[in-house]
Length: 127
Image 1: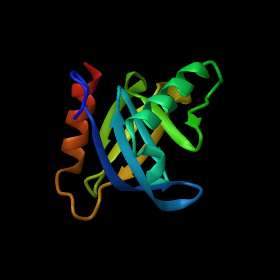
Image 2: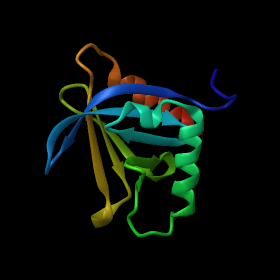
Image 3: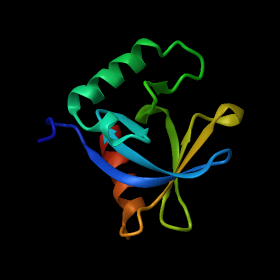
Image 4: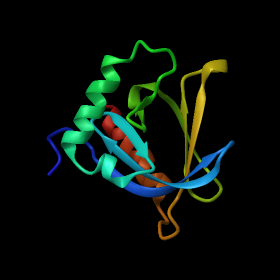
């Protein structure tokens, strides 16, 4: 059961990467952050998620550092824009200007409402 006031959501997605091509990733919205990893076990318990978030917060001063133990952590507060891909996936823009980064996640094949579900959840969790 999610904690009161928290929004939790998870999906298996295809992550597009300009250098490595496509790969299956596990995406999870938890405690005002989006986490993604190539290993499902890295995101399977709340204790692990809380530990990753704590470790991320402790090293926030590290320039450009977003990975903790192989898991990418994206604070919702840093997301400046969400867009829909042609395949129904979601593009997250983090930061603004030349230093912004884009993360593209393609919708699972069996999902018709992936973008709407994630965009609404991100908006709700950001409040």
